[in-house]
Length: 226
Image: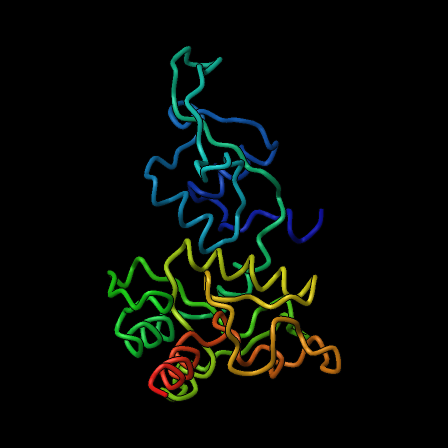
């Protein structure tokens, strides 16, 4: 069995048993088949373990289906694949201590619209997208300085974090850089990735809103003042 197909939970636990049941990639009743009852359990599976569920276009990852075993119409859940999300596996290298420090440094303000949110609503992401990393290993020192934190991480709510991933992935594949919606401005470089620059060189991301929203705002505000 491939490493990605191994059960990510400790044996003899409820979640381990539920994962074993769902490994067949079929719909399973949350009443008579699965032991995990709370919605936050499945969110933990997705956000912290990188487990991928079968979701509709709206992001809904469960369905009310008539159960063949208990005969009732109940909430069913289904795994999409046994492979774990690469981005979540990488992001999970950020320990709780460091995660709290990052959110504290930014005052729990989401970096796209600078909204102050509940800290639990925020996700931490690397400024430099993992598609451009030369290695999947990223050592995160929980005692790194505030300046190191600001140089390395930003905080986003879930929808904006997903948007950042999509934009950065598209940039990596096509060479067309991301922009703030409706504002085509890069304080370094232009609309396209510099072809003379190695695609794994972090300097190629500089100037893009999605790499550093704070620096991008500072630069554009200076232009406005002029």
